[in-house]
Amino acid sequence: MDYSRDKGRENVKERQAKVLLTADLTEDALARLRDAVDVTEGGALWHQRLITPEELAAELQGQDVLIVGYEQVTDEVMDACPDLKLIASIRGGPEANISIDAATKRGIPVLFTLGRTQHAVAELTFGLMLAIARNIVAGDRLIHERIITSDVAPAYARDVVWRLPEGTDSQRIHTALRGTELFGKTFGLVGLGNIGEEVARLGQCFGMRVITADPYLAPERAESLGVEKVELPDLMRQADFVSLHARVSPETTGLIGEPEFQLMKPTAYLINTARAALVDEQALLKALQERWIAGAALDVFHKEPLDPDSPLLELDNVILTPHLAGSSREIPLHHSRMVVDDVLAYLNGHITRPRVKNPEVFNAPAFAKRGGLAFG
Image (cartoon, rainbow, N blue to C red; front, top):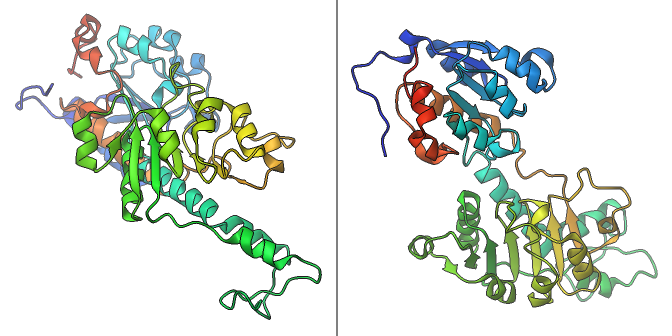
């Protein structure tokens, strides 16, 4: 649906919408924004910290638009800001710090940067999967700890040049480092949103059979992606690698528990670059400790940073990274471009619907009461 206003209306520059910016944007994106609207830089940009809801409400007085990073945008903030007509988040999950229901009730659309971490998360997912499948981390540790050094190759492995300390069980180490290929394996994706789709594409490039369990995925969409849609128990039974890409909700919290782990092959691996809450942590520990599954690669934890006494740190069949999936040098470029594109398009009467978190707001009387798409 197109919510465009008449073509003859004046442009944003002429109307000079007032925008409060509390998020970090690239210089190029900021220059584009300043050229079109009246920008006030506030929040963390002034204070070098996340400001309180009370401080945010004070800075928002008289502003039409808020472009926000991580400040809490609460009911009280919106109540205190009757001029606020639009909130734009640089995050892919704006519900983490913005009360979406409150915004909808008050007729305020919330834009978000859907897909800003798509490539970064997909690539780390594959990095972790390759690392655990091919024992990359274990091999690196053996070299760094001087357990394996170069000189003479063992007779049974002429393509691997090792010298092991006297008394080392070289056959055991060589067997332990022999990994498994991804080619020809079944790759199970729990959730197939924009990140899951990118992961599926990468899996297909590696020659993997890709299956997914996603109750919201239309069968025709799965077919167009070359992905087989199955129920979760079937996915857990069939997959050689299970990767999680679902959002956390009451229905998905603890989605992968002891019954699911018991369905997995003993040679299978779990990869989680989504959210720790999707997995029952005690069930995962049991599955790893008792070798129900071959291993896991985790970028997210129930408590972050991970406790130094976490049992996960004692396991040799798990790879751990400190929530790196959404951290790439390119992500600020992505979210800056997306949020400025969308805000300027919106102010000119055009809505990129997939990146509106609460599209139902456009049918709410409160939306028209706040002025709808009219800024001036």
